[in-house]
Amino acid sequence: MARSSPLRSETFHWTFSGSRDAIWTALADTERFNEAAGLPRYDIEERTDADGRVRFFAEAKVRGVKLAWEELPTNWVRNAWFSHTRVFSQGPLATMTAELQLQDREGGSEGFYTLSARPRT
Image (spheres, rainbow, N blue to C red):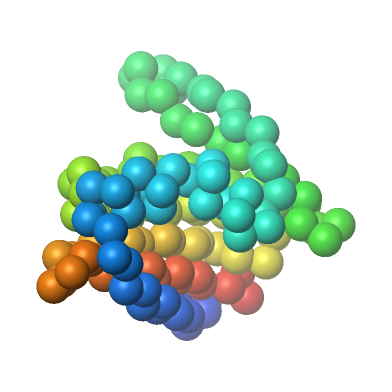
């Protein structure tokens, strides 16, 4: 039985003078966030299973390496948190999850953004 690779995570903490509502609008826009982070655009294909479930599959190239993954449904509570996981079928990663938690604080809000990845090998 093969052992899975260890999960690796990094959390980033930011403080904002704006409200959670204002911050949510900027950080929950995945396409804009990915572009600001310098990630490449990617193509998404919708596929419907025999049972009617719609699934989303994507592909991109990063530094000449082809990546392919399934976009799992994002879980979220508006202006509070989200969790978004990709399950890779091609490339160096097995999974990657991005999680954002926003909290009120005096004079604004704060955000905790955690990226977790499990290498394929």
